[in-house]
Length: 285
Image (tube, helix red, strand yellow):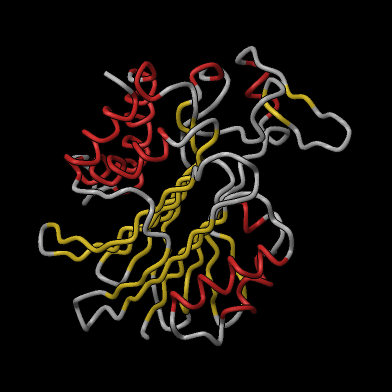
């Protein structure tokens, strides 16, 4: 079976289209939650096909409304982020612990999904992906998880608060070296695992699997009157815009799609050459 056929089967089963829909918006159907979102994705100028994929949708489970949002930033091809787009949230919500212990359920699902990617590397190829995921439960709770350097930033009374951890190789040098890997730092370049990957945690990456972690950092944040919006974005944005700048650029823009587009446009204006993906989640708008 060809790689493209394998991905198409997964996507068909999950009722997902490709990532060609690069802009859009939506809103919670429950008036009591008052959650809205917008997204905008732009292909970079690095010469390869678009490797960013996203999820932005609402789903009803056990009389609860869930807002499901994610950005998957692929490397060495788009097969792994495409696979994640089709499967990761299903795997999280299938976890028996999800309603009693969401943190453990999310960690378990990240691990099992990574194992599935590695087991299917013949079809998916040697590439990998970072991930940042957000689950909004009934407009009252946020569950945020990430591996890699895609990031979630919260605006609280106009102040930026980073909700995720950038998993940089030099920070996790001890773990990587204990697992037989090494970190390279060449002049003019960022630290890399085995001279290849600029993040210490990721999905996939068959050749580096012994030295990378797929364990996410998971965080719970209650939504209250001070919670204004959350920005999810790939590192194509965060390389050129810091957290507070991002919040300041869009805090007055009520339309979340327009806000997401404003951030991607600014990243392009600042000469970001990577793929740039952004989701804005607004509360009480």
